[in-house]
Length: 485
Ligand code: NAP
Image (cartoon, rainbow, N blue to C red):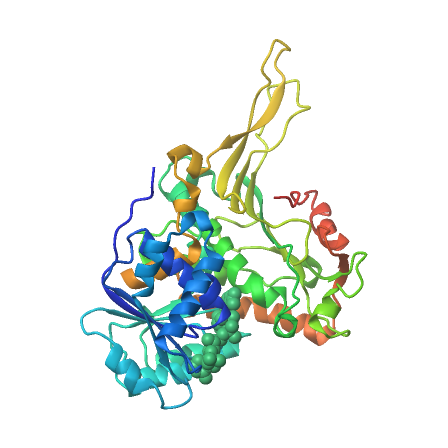
């Protein structure tokens, strides 16, 4: 069953930073796929903007190369690509200068959705917002899309929010967290709130603990200097893992409406307890048999104390979750690329079976990558005549198999989110107060280890992370799930 495609309204999407890495790898190939699927119609237009003095033809050649490089051959065709390129324009603009703005203004059409993707360094957000208004290119209906990192602490996030707020209302600002655009993340909300089955059990009384894992195999080489100023807490936990935690922990919103959903997420962040130092493990990968392959080498900073791995135990102080820990971990250069949320339920209060050898808890596993899908681990009777023996089997709820969808036809996170911008739907975007609340939680943690001068524990590249991270769970009588694809 092919996904249902509802075409979006006519639009002009300006991509500031249209020649950058993000545009090349994600935004432009994603837009091509939406064009090919018929969601972006002939009335949609994409305008690349950057300082480079490119002709429209050379920018189109750049877009062609980007699409060819980042769209599998089986998923593209020459006819639709040639057609897509007809919808591409280019303007040379300096965010900090005056050149190019009148040309951009002349290019923009009236009576279409105007969206501006700020795919540039956050330091330029203010300049772009200011000039879009000074040149009367943006109006009260226009939308802006901003990328991570949204600040590096509460103070800088507040300053960014304030800069954008000078020219745009909150309903016009789309802060991207691409984790929220994943099919399974939305499916999680459907499973929770469109069924009666899980919600009565969705609380501390029945849930022993929650594990959220985002494991990567990549290292930081190539962006070591940037990463070294950030680290796993700022780069992954404060935004992506926090958003996943919110979706698991939030109360049912009164409606699937942007502010209703975001109000509930905000309440979760505000209910998070401060994290004690003993409940956090920071790690940094070291070379495993290959010289020059450690974090310090990649960051070009032998003294670096930045973490490439973090594991922590979070508590949410509210009626629903008091007593249920949320264990979060993420890291680079780990043994496998795997992102998942695992919700482990408590044991039944009393067992009527003598054979408990095969007994395990129910676990709901939500896989984000690879192989998006869900599994519910349940106990059944082992088939055969051997008496009442128990075994655990997965109830596979992966939507692709069940609804027969071709996974390749399902839009990736960026495709979906950009279409949501054009549709004017902010549900899957972070609101300013959410981002600030997440920094307010993360800041004291970061400040604590900066003040103490804590060094991260070294772990072997290709391993599951530092030893102490295992202990974080062991001492609570629990264990991490294996990291595997
Ligand atoms: P990038 O490869 O360095 O590209 C930056 C883009 O901005 C280029 O097109 C550059 O073109 C343009 N630019 C720079 N200064 C400009 C100015 N003064 N006026 C107008 N345009 C200017 O960066 P990127 O990796 O694409 O990242 C863009 C944003 O997305 C950043 O905020 C980054 O943190 C965020 N992000 C990126 C990724 C990723 O995977 N790359 C992932 C998540 C978030 P000219 O030099 O020709 O002006």
